[in-house]
Length: 302
Image 1 (cartoon, rainbow, N blue to C red):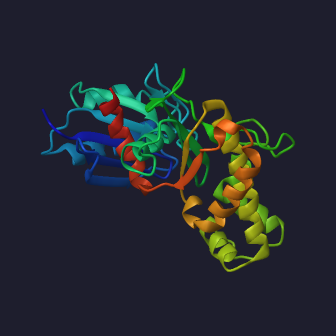
Image 2: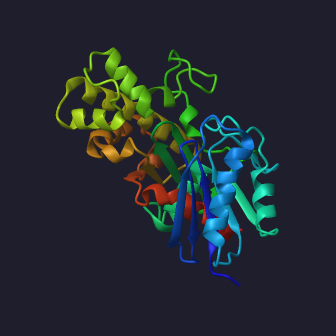
């Protein structure tokens, strides 16, 4: 039997594929942009091309698929918000058919990030883990008692839509005051501009981070505001799930101390319960590889 698992990570910006060995090492990766404004089959052809590229001359024992959500785990379908052409797309069935019926495991990309970090990254040794992605959006996944927890539909851990401001602005999910409306990179930049941050029209969260590190008062405040919202989310999820560790990745998290220092300070104000005293927060270690490693881990768990 092959020692390799094919891992797919399907997002709105890019689609990645990788071969992962039994130890969790990525031995080959491929990546293509996600077609914008294209139909469902055009997006599928990109996935299919990556499957063929990755498996030619390299037999695999199965496939793990990480997808942006929402997903419908029982049906094996996905409806990613940022891939509008895919609504109830039968990705598990199509991948299996392409590879002659090999086993295919599907999960949300947040869960796969958490599972990858738990297996090979900053979550190693934790029993009750939240993997949190703070980037263009805010997402996450849960590993509870050492095992991935997908929930009833496969969408457990969708922590970007924890409400942190009951009087807050509308969110893309249809709710109001979600942490994503405050801590997602584009929302941080928009808030900073509204409050006097002078930057070029194409400035993004990375530019905002540089400004904050240089001491720009509005940029610093934008990061403190986002960090407080993320800390409130962590405290809420930790109290419900009795977590011992949180691992945070994504583009905004890569800004380092300007996010993590105010986050840890705010978390100390929100975690008064005695059983949360041992909760630790760490930056993610695997970067963009976490989703692929975690997707492969779905086969390991199975």
